[in-house]
Amino acid sequence: MRWRMYSAASLLLLTSAASPVRPDEIAKTPAFTNVPELASGFQALYVQNFREAREKFAAWEAQHPDEPFGQVAVAASYLFEELYRQGVLSSDFFLNEKRFLNGIEGKPDPARMKSFQEAIQLARKLARQRLEKDAGDAEGLFALALSAGMESDAAMILKKEHLEALKRLKEASAHAKELLAQQPDANDAYVALGTANYIIGSLSGGKRFLLRFGGIHGDKKLGMEQLGNTIEKGRYLRPYAKILLALAARREKQNPLAQKLLRELKEEFPESPLYAAEYAKALGRPIPAQMHP
Image (cartoon, rainbow, N blue to C red; front, side, top):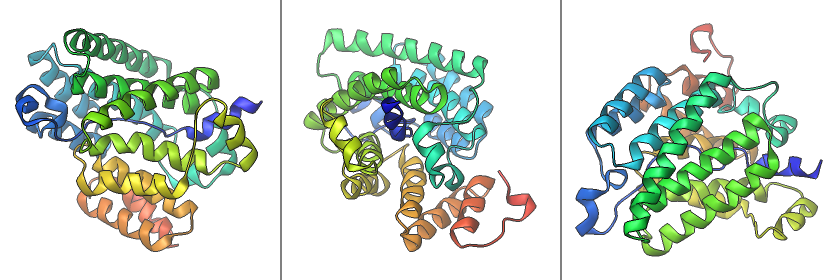
């Protein structure tokens, strides 16, 4: 039973990308630069056009088969879609303590999860190949951090395999910290640390005490600040950080902040019903039928 506490870290490290690296490496690291094809794919992802996003990611990956980031993006599209279909990226999930702590009701789509796992495995393989040549390769470290983080999300929220989730959580945190130690301006990586700090910091004192034995600590205020770093200076993960911080702000009854972030998301992605519906909820207004995600 006590492993249920770990599912509170459910949205720990979902999808995505990164930020600038050393100037001499920029041309070799698509995860840390604005690649138009990838940016277009993430644009489609954030308006819940999952098939279109995958097609764009796969097309780019076909032209860059040695780059792990393409497969990371493909995996993110499957995970993001399943979280969306299950209603995880909403205040209904975040404000329901039982669901927030224990994950979804029922089971995830098996075909979608199989495709997710296949993309993760290939991303890991490509990342390790880069790290075999250069143990400090930033793109390799980032791909491993994201892969472990997404696997932790899937295990915690969707599959409710809490021991596996904790293992992947620690792995992702280690890779993210190693990356940030050598590349402090990799601001998208703060989504991983920020979400972990916030969610673990939200647990009761007794549960946080038990987690410390596993080397896991949490601080809600720090976590929200770290999400803010990605919102201010991140790249592909900026919208995702806004979603998470807005939902965290609603939990903390910081309604002006939640309303601001959700309004910005609604304006940036007018095609998506998700942000319009969440903005209406944050304002305490009824949701018109056409706004239901």
